[in-house]
Amino acid sequence: MVLRSAYRQVFGNAHLMDEELVSTAESLFLQGDLAVQGLVAALACSDTYRRLFLDKNGPYRFVELNFKHLLGRAPRDQAEVSEHVQRLANEGYEAEIASYVYSPEYIGAFGFDTVPYWRTTHTQTGESNLTYTRSLKLKGGEASFDGSSSSKLQVSLATGDAPSVAVRGGRGGSTNRNDRRFRINWTTASPSGLNRRAVQVSIVPFSSLTSTLQSLQRRGGSIVSVTND
Image 1: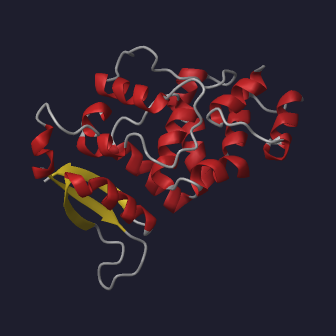
Image 2 (image 1 turned 120 degrees about the vertical axis):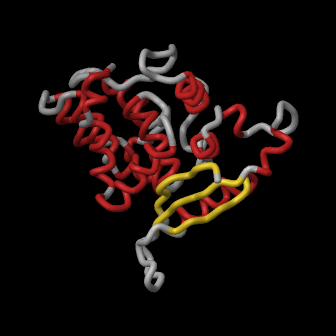
């Protein structure tokens, strides 16, 4: 029962073939050599998890899903996502996974022997209503699979809006949304003369915000911050 629950939570409700299962981690857990925390870490560090959620989606969506699968909530803001995207780029895949599973937040919420679960079914003390709204957007349906490559929160986190507002056009004051400009501070590991690894700045309208963020990430850029200009 614990194994089934862990697979469902960590792999976002994916239907896995026998060859995609993490048999070594299963054996260690059943023999008592891994606590649930170690099992979760092993599943998330597996080639199957990496293929499904990083290779197919890219770093931004990968981080978004790591929050969902491993901490049971949505990221709170753009800074939190940027921190993890940069850790993935600078410290590697396993360090990124460990930063969730071995964090004080994880231990406080799930301990060593509880499979992570979706914590934001109800509002929580210390969390904003905006985090709650984003968590509902990220959760999806009970039968849904998290393999979609499109981010559910990218625009919302960048603009500070609730997801339902950030993706809606038309009435309610959104007709002037494209008049807003956003300053994207980003860095790149690619040589660019004297500006190598220096913070670069792009200023874009709302209509170009998502495509610009995705373009920067495809080029290997790390988003430092996104603010209203």
